[in-house]
Amino acid sequence: MKRNRRARSIAGLFVTLCMLPLLLANMACMDPLPVPVGDSERSRIDPRLNGMWVGTLFEVPYILVFDSFDKRAWLMSAYGFGVDVEGEEPETEWAEETPEVEPATAAAWLDALHSVTIDEQVYWNYKTWKTKLRGTEFLTWEAGLVFDEDGLHKANLWYVWKLEWLDKDSFELYLVNDEFEDIGEVTKRSQAERIIKRNLKNPDLFEEETYRFHRIEPVDHERAVELLSDAVFCSFDEC
Image (cartoon, rainbow, N blue to C red; front, side, top):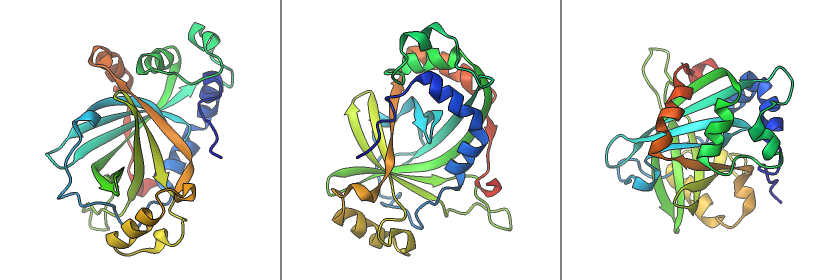
């Protein structure tokens, strides 16, 4: 059974973020799939994803920005936030009022992030596209800032997520488990897609954790941008 990550206090979440360097390293260095899923040259963007979203990835608050690069793919920016609470739970009115759950809306997330001290911010970017496998939507994130020995960009980090819409303003992501069967050893996209298609209803195909994101409405974009102003680039080669 999947553990409900939202059933814990936001204060506890912020205390956990004192380990930001370790947690961000886990995200950057976790094993991706050896191939992408779907054809980025034949995909089509989903306008529902355009814009800014807030939630958590790997225990760290993130703002995701989906900016359509063309009709086929997005340039997706991921901004992670570390919170300096000096080992103590943040004494904020918001945290006291909602001690048992993570924020239920994007506005509440922004209230929470603005109520504490942002100690560190890290930024990654991805080429992102969507594909459907037997009616199930998947997103492939191709990591940017990955270079070969000549300093040229190379694409060899692909994170594949099942995308499940909760409503028009929220979705959940399920990361494909690179250790499921032999999907981590395939050499062709078609091989990975066959494994996924055969196992869409097998919960072991996906990592245990799920990640929920909420749409940041245009009226709150300015507040979100204020949080991004000090973000620093992180190259995957530096993991």
